[in-house]
Image (cartoon, rainbow over all chains, first blue to last red; front, top):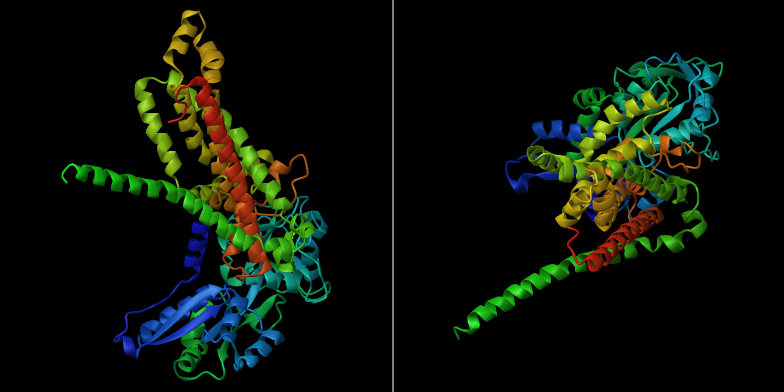
Length: 286
Length: 300
């Protein structure tokens, strides 16, 4: 049973986009691996690009930012997708292997805080969110809402969004802070799990990538601390840096990109690639 | 020469069947070896106090499996308590009370029930049952151990019904006739004679139902909320839990191979394997004991 489960999980994670090419020897394959936050985006890019350039085949795999960067360090992929910047030790490891990782910012990502549409709470500060998600605040009354228990919803602990939220919100960006999510936090296996619960449960509060928020959830404005302006997440507020829970998304290449990788990357950064970024709910660069 | 040929054929067929029979044992042993090989390092890579601690948060190296074990037990226990009376009553109804035509409809329908993919049930549970549970029981969220138990009860019902039904069917009709001839009512016959006579088959039905429930993953992952909390309150059944199976399924896909987290997930797998193995062993022991005493067929 476990074995079958594993195999199916592995199968789910190696989604490959390939297109019928004119002749096998003329096809260049680009290996692209990394962040699960970015896997749908990377697949959409690969698909759109493959339609225009049948001579290039782009194999996209998820697995997480760490997995992608590890593959880049070992030289098994051409491009690693990352929802965080490369760590110093990862860079040192790569250099020990004779690989110089080069960083490219390809899109922006923001985390929206969502509640049930009937919830009267309009805005929250990061310290309030930290207290809510670490279990110090357990009733909506304490943050200006109705007298209801708070039900915490989170993505599974291995998702990039979970880690980003833990570091930037629960720990307020302080690397020495060791606060954890409350053990009562419901860990949902999918974005759909979060939206299904937020839609129907007036007690719920959840977070997810801005691109995954459906119109039937209510998005809350966020301020970095009490006294600072509350900002509603939109493309503009994320791009100008005023929305506090946002981050850049990266692609790392081995050295300065060459040949097919360079062309693909400049297409991603161009108008067509960035239009796809917006389509998938991420924040385009321009 | 000619006389040897059928015998040779016999030999090959026998050998083939023997290989097929032993392969089942071989696979179980291989799987167990694989599990131990991947899971055993967990026991020296992290301390036992951590491994059986109260907090499961692998990102920070906290591998307390206590909430997962208790979560699995709670959900499975709840499922059995719900499914046993329902399944038994259905089996009695189908065997003893239903007219022939109704029995012919009910039996295939129960088979269909067994064929519903668990992910479909899970989705149904998430969008339909969970909101209902939250509203009717007035609990903070509908994603609770109880919701998981409901889904699991539904999934183990076909197993419980068909095994219990076979057990009731195997009760010699002389028992039934004798009881009725002594003036017992229909209900007295069922309750005092047939069910006690089918007792061991009913126990097997429960055991197999538990086995089915504890290993179920998808539906449970979708409806129990997956919060790794220790169920210590009296109303813990109506609060979220995280089961062993859901943990393996949710985390195995992205864990770095060879890391402590990876080994711990396999250790949880070993635990699960042992529990199912134990349940099956107890069920087999009951079959053997029951079969020997009555000398009758109690399981189809």
